[in-house]
Every structure is written in structure tokens, then in C-alpha cells.
Amino acid sequence: MLRGTGGVNPALHLTIVAALCAGAARAEMTCAFEAECFETEACAGTTFALDIVDGDPIRFVTEFGDLAMTYFADDTWLAQGQGMSLLLSRGEDGAARASVHLPGPLVTTYLGTCRSEG
Image 1 (tube, helix red, strand yellow):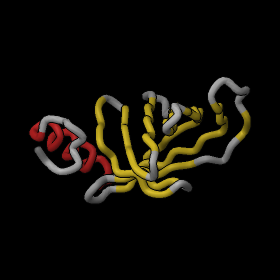
Image 2 (cartoon, one colour; image 1 turned 90 degrees about the vertical axis):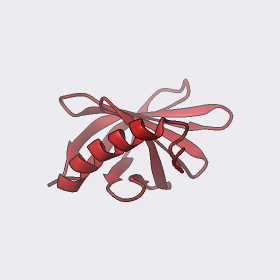
Image 3 (cartoon, rainbow, N blue to C red; image 1 turned 60 degrees about the horizontal axis):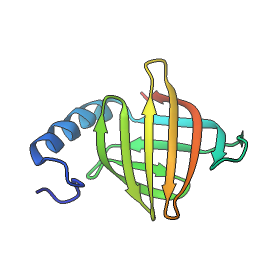
Image 4 (tube, rainbow, N blue to C red; image 1 turned 30 degrees about the vertical axis):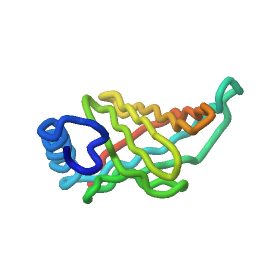
């Protein structure tokens, strides 16, 4: 098993990483979120943003710190680190949803958009 695959089949992991790296080599992705929803509380405005940055490992760069990407498939990414998991999904139109999962369990959901840079 490859280090950092998070239990993903090594051959599949390499295919996923190669596919994302090919896209990331051309352009990194930036996501900006306008709404933040904590647990069952009403949503509020936010300026939370994240970047997906090419490298080894591919990582999410956030105000919380860097998170290593552990999974990618069909416009869905999972990154982990800093004591949290961050799940990101993006539609064809760029609409994005991110959820930050913390021990407890606690979750904060973000609504916004992602676009490729470049």
C-alpha cells in the first residue's frame, strides 16, 4: 500500500492522482465561499476560501492550514489534516459545497464556487 493513500487501492490511487495532477499542472483551482452553516444553526456570510495546489501530496491550502488530499473522483475531493477532514464537491457550473468535519462530531458546511486558475 502506498503511504498516504488512505486505504485506496494503490493502482487506483495512482490513476486518480495522475488525473488530478494533469489538471493541476495546467491550472490550480480556487474556491470562494459566501455562506457558512454550522451544525443546525442558520447560515451566515463568510469569506472562507481554499486553493487546491499541485505537489506531493496535492493539498488544500486554507486559513486553517494545509490539508493533504487523500481522495478524488468525479469532481469530489477529500483532504485531511489539522485535526479535520474537508470534503469538497463541484458541479459543472462551478457551484461548490465544502464540509469541514471535526471530532465530536461537528460539521460546518460552506456554499460557494470553484474555478480553475490559469
